[in-house]
Image (cartoon, rainbow, N blue to C red):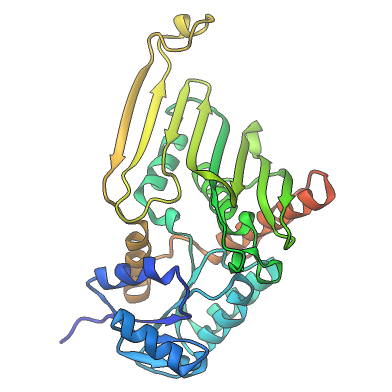
Length: 352
């Protein structure tokens, strides 16, 4: 008897598909069956380019195909909820590109549709599936560098294509949704907590989206998280943890994909007597580095989704988790708009 497979369909011909297609094909329990676009000719051209057997001229045609049981949804952000619900109603499991939605109400709709139709809807925030993220969470939980006082993150590059949908405010564009969402999810994951208050400032572009976004989030026990996301900066990625007894530095915390070597460097204090005195901060310290060579976070993401679809394992990112991430980002946008600190909706409740 043939082993069950996850038979995938691509809902859109977005550029991000180029990261996910090799991951689907790299999974021994997956088959890429089809791609849907808004026009038959475009779908056929794309299918030929990527050697995909089936091409659909409408999204609905693919959802009606019983051979496909998993959808990778990579439409623009503002369409995620609408089409995730339609996929669920068609009985398809959905791996939905991040951000999963741009309102908490939309995430709630998706959760209701998933439960009603007995399918999985999971956010494709690829860094959450990489073992480096789990390792960082364990380091924090074990208090390897003592009590965390500050986490700083940067995710920035130059986006110079004026026609890019990420510059369209009506499509859920902006650096916070595109890049900062990783920083928010990363902090919440490694701390296993929700921010109690956020404040932010943004630099807006000609289209009205945030081109650069600077944020601070206060977590329980006084932990501060600061991050910067930008479409108008020299490319830079990093995360830095400062604790009472040391420092953790991750050089590629959220763009750890094909061919990247990600490193986590842990520096610990020397003996208590020595480090209590003012010095250059290096005497007696020890540094250990853990490297992740040539690991593909997209492969981790697809493999995890396949495991959940075929064997019922718990999704890495629950919809309640995604709801909280969206709630935090919405609060950050509100703070940037009003110039005042904001308590995220996670402080009043959660998606259950």
